[in-house]
Length: 105
Image 1 (spheres, rainbow, N blue to C red):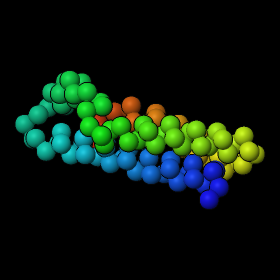
Image 2 (image 1 turned 135 degrees about the horizontal axis):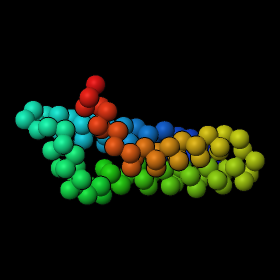
Image 3 (image 1 turned 180 degrees about the horizontal axis):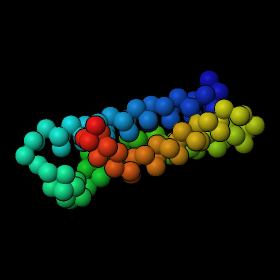
């Protein structure tokens, strides 16, 4: 398997883990009906981001996809650029609180 394709596959798996992490966070917060949005924000700010292995996996996959994508881009593979873009989006989306928008829907 070429490194560009491998980078894209790793980044896609990482995007799945980011979605899964934010979805589980939204479900945990919305399951307690007596909590207001401000209380949920305070609760989430008190919880460390890296408390479980499930939150470290997307960051690791994002960095791995970024490195493999850079290697494949150096070898003149154009699909490596897609892997780099997806990996950067994993890292950015992980630290954005997307779960707030999932609750309001």
